[in-house]
Amino acid sequence: MSDGKPTPAVGNSQASTNIYAANQAVQCVTLMHIKSMHQHNSLKFWEHDTVADIKKDRATVDNMIADISDKVQKGIFDPSQGTESYKRSRKILVESILAAGNQVGNCDEMTAAAFRYLRDSLNVRPLDWMNQGDNPHQMQHAFIVIGRPAGSLPADLDDIHPWPVIKNWGAAAVLCDPYEKKVIATPQEIMKHLAGQFLQLWYHED
Image (tube, one colour):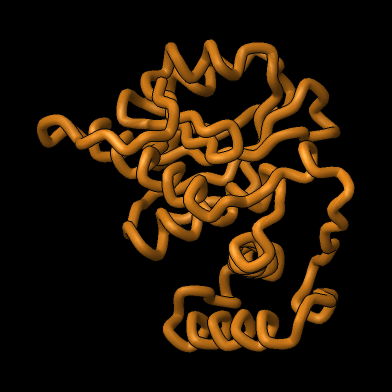
């Protein structure tokens, strides 16, 4: 487990590479000085599902729309992926930009900022946006998994004992939690961290 400080990769193993990337992402979000709403409940935060719902200053929205349009033209966001997938990929971009610009947000916004940094700045794949909660119908926290192998089951909302799922993520999978400033490697350590939690895969990119 790490406290979020960058640590160099050791050797050439994929696990070390993923740990290094996760630490870099946590450090990046830390340097954004994003204030948690849980700690600053007097701050009023936005609620939105689409660009049109955002009621923040015009310059931020204009820059955000330009960034989205640029990425659509480059094919990074492909509408053919499906309406829900496209909406979620756009929400990651929107929340990461607004979190950095307004310096306020909770686990969703910090996870969005870290996800975008890993994907766009470090070119890390595969990436999973995961949610966890003690109720399968009410997820309570967001985090990222780096390096889950293709074909492995990401989550099981029918089972509060996630070990059968996590053990198949492989030795290179790393949990990155920018909100809690944690980087956790090895299936055993990830399982300790997520014990008693239902897991949900919210978004995936290869």
